[in-house]
Length: 299
Image 1 (cartoon, one colour):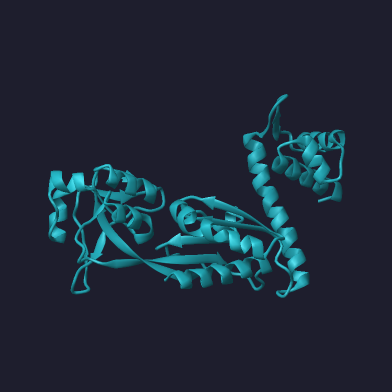
Image 2: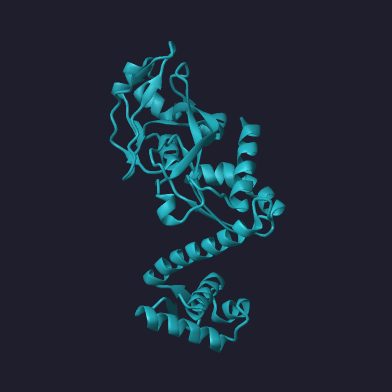
């Protein structure tokens, strides 16, 4: 790739980030006219329109969004090249990209992230909050945090960084209407709210008092692809939920959800996953050390 082609891509990335030809051009030391010409060259070379322009708004087309994702990988590769020269002792800098389950990210990780970003001001952070399990190598993520998900991908390394209790709960209205189960077998007469996505389907395997695992045989008329949606459905009286403690502890404390079969207890692991590499960039290493330390303090 010629330097001029790479420069046009960098101009496009700057404009997309800024949402403006003027600001994006200034970030690259260009006038608005020069930035516009760079985008025109890039679009002509690719044969697609990357940006939709109106008098008031600048937005990415579908092709522009796809190309922007590829651009992030280019920037990450540049950061990696710089870091490989600087060595592990170098100052963390560049773009840190991660994918985290939605509710866990917002309730647990984001409140902690401020301290990390203050400690390392040269690091930019991009977080994808989704309950979908994505291929982090293919999508260009530096790491993922997942709940109870293991993998057999030789390209990845995983490490358990925390463990949370898993609680069964339902709304007071639901329990009043349907009765409270006393044994696991009683669940067969109840509505169980299950997690389901294209890649994962949850089956309830419960650890009973003697430590053995049993499969719950409850009905499942409603399946959702979000832990928070399952919690909210339970609070609205649609069934019984089985969720990590961090998702339901406040609702149980306020009484909008009640524990069900409290004698049954289990836990779910929080797993840090990252690509297997000989060299781990300083921004990735410092974040992993930071999140491991913080998770240890919370457990």
